[in-house]
Image 1 (spheres, rainbow, N blue to C red):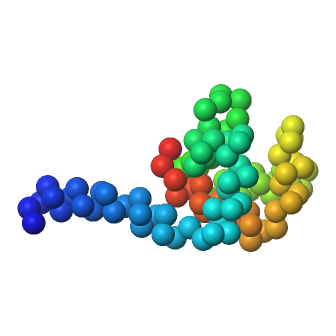
Image 2: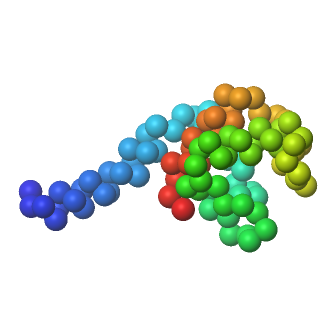
Length: 100
């Protein structure tokens, strides 16, 4: 196999490797985010934050701040109250591993 074919094969397998790590629980949780934040966290609106590719720690901190009521929001403070720490970690990890 020549170098070009090897690179192409590696690039083609990269999305599968990232997706293989996604638990059914993570996929289920992030499905609820799609209506506002877009498929795979790629928002099409300038009014709603895109989540894809953001650092995991930032997503965790923001979600916990929404949940605790220390970050202002229109609806996220209500939605975030339904997530425990483990679920927030799953969601943050999922979106952090998505390309922007």
